Image (cartoon, rainbow over all chains, first blue to last red; front, side, top):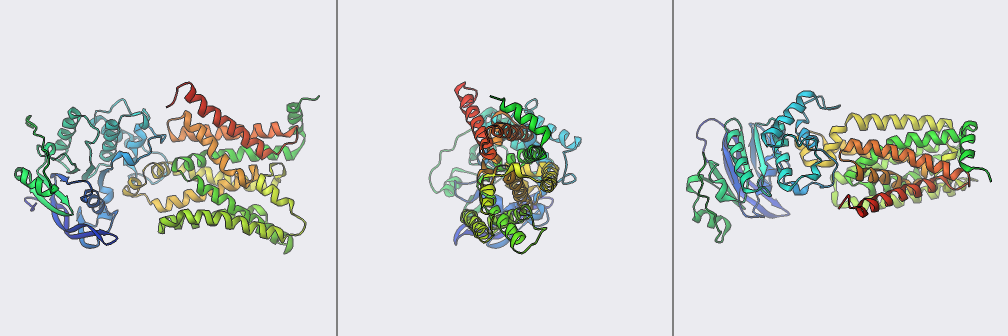
Length: 249
Length: 285
């Protein structure tokens, strides 16, 4: 997507990344403008998560450069609210919901000792936005998959980030909650940039302005031009696109 | 027949060695509750086991230099501290720089540390009974000087473990997220391994090298069954460890059983009955 107005918060220039010589991403170049709501889509194994980790500076590109929030990804990362997929977390871990959300406040205080009253207020506010108020003292492990997902989104919000990066935020979330979540993200994209990884292309296209299609190569489409043909090209096979008849807004 | 528990209590008021033993158990228990909870949730108990066994190398070497070369200051406990910290740093660096070799290094240190200890002890004249006390604990032989060192280590472990609670919690729960929040996770992981090393040294004096891993994991595992937050787990785990060491000491004293082994059997019995009991009564899946 070209820079339409304002500056770009993500600039990816000719990035190639390979694991042991096998290219996962090739010659990737795209930009994300400030306060955009963008979705990254593509088949499993297509390189979505790799692209995310490059944007966070957790991986270094084999070739090319990335600029995030005007600096290198590793320097920008504390200004990004990131939500990983919750499946990688230990479901037996003894933490409360509030403990998890407060982790988003790390790096804001002195670096040692307990969290401040302000930190707790921000964390509780983030839970309220996700309609999880009253659950802050629940054990994280007692929640359903969809609730855990929302706690992790609240944790990303508690970072008070300039950009949100959410990896599959709607996995395990029921359709009604999914609509609510995208309404919230749409609202947030008025003040910060929101990037959502999703495989549910049909649904996100109602909300996002552009779709970054990742399958080893990357193409960016404004939402209006995402047609069956584009999707077929992306997934290299026919996909079943679910039509949503309700309109947004 | 006299009452063995009464004998323990009346001797406790009379003999300093018994008071030292009790105090060592209490001090070690507090550190063990905090660090054991980190070790169990971070799933690094094999690392703790490996560090424990390298301690024999340190104990043996220090004893050797103390006896053969007359380095009087070189108490075995200092050797244990040095060996444990060295092992922690080596394992930490390997797991950061060459993750795929971590398992091998843990196993190698485990065995090489023991081998070095056995060699040193074999070359130290007249002290072969040391080996048994290092391996199986010698809580009744804790001197007043040892007790001061134990208290110092305990204070350091508790202070660091509590001060950086938030960082350690994030490191154990979601290391990647902690890194993204600007936490220097490599540094904190190394610090956690060093705390584990110091706790291992404390526990070696109580139950011996071979049984350290049980005392570091069992109370935390029992506490984990009943608690929903990490710091609750730590408090309960510390209380349990103190109860286990005190009970083990009291029970073993009358019939003159080995104290370390008695402590571990009590800890194991409580773990087993709580784990089975909770599931039997369908309180847990």
